[in-house]
Image 1 (cartoon, rainbow over the protein chains, first blue to last red):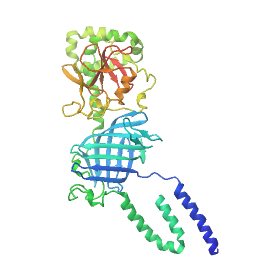
Image 2: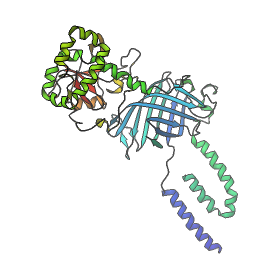
Image 3: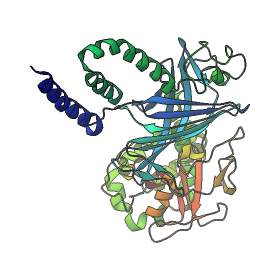
Image 4: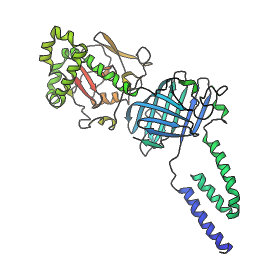
Length: 154
Length: 283
């Protein structure tokens, strides 16, 4: 194979791969962003949180895989196409320990449709297959999560 | 995935010789990038720990910074108990005694027969037995026999939901079962009204009250977009403050009660709300 033909073949191959990279279907990936604001003002933002719904519980795992927050939900009802649930408890699984959070209140919005859904009385939209969670603890820590669900196990 | 894809493009573009030299470097860059972009630690990792770090995180690194909010108990939360707790007692308490007094005959007139045919008898069977266990003895001594004979069967007339007649179980909720949530008045059925230590909804104005068996139950205003609002809309009911007589009194989940003005669908009286079918059963 000559140098010029090698170059031509390589360019063609590169073009193909580049096209796939640019326009090819993207696989599911962790898209969640969790913000934890402590009562003392310290705010932590965690990106690439993996979000899973397994048997009516919501599992959120940090990008490093070392922490998982489990939210139990109840009183789920639909507002249009948007499911609204009240969070009833939160558990942190981390460092080999399972600890209940001193949970106060929280609300969870789940959009199972292929279209973005508007929140009632709000300008906020929940993206397709997206989730929006906010809850507080008794000592005043606020936790919020936005993202898309990576996996659902019913 | 796409990052790897683009790295492949770069590797190929630089040619076979360069590619072998670059592969090791590429891997390193990928690893570093993942850590930085991963964002498990908001600001360089150290910032995630409020003070001293170790105390805030059980593991001393990684995961979520929620150490101050945890408590030793390791049980997630009592889902099962939560769901079961309220309904039985509430239903038993209310049924029978109060219901018999007010409305039995009137409520039955319009659509009672059909309601009874469908499910009234089964409802009576279940409720009666449980009711008697809880508080029936005194009633039986005083007037129980006549009550049971006269009003037993006419009682518990079900008024089917006018909108979800053939909706099946949970048809009003896209087929998804609704369970009460602890910490909310009415389990959250009437809206997101959190209850405090006194069992009163926090931040919600009392909307009258109902006294039943010597216990006062506060009522609160139903919030829009809640299942309770759907229920009121289905029956074309308008909520009013509880207290005066001649109202539709609806006993809902978790010891909740609301009142409404009677209309052509629902006569004045006491009703038990069936959350599954969003239907009313007279008491």
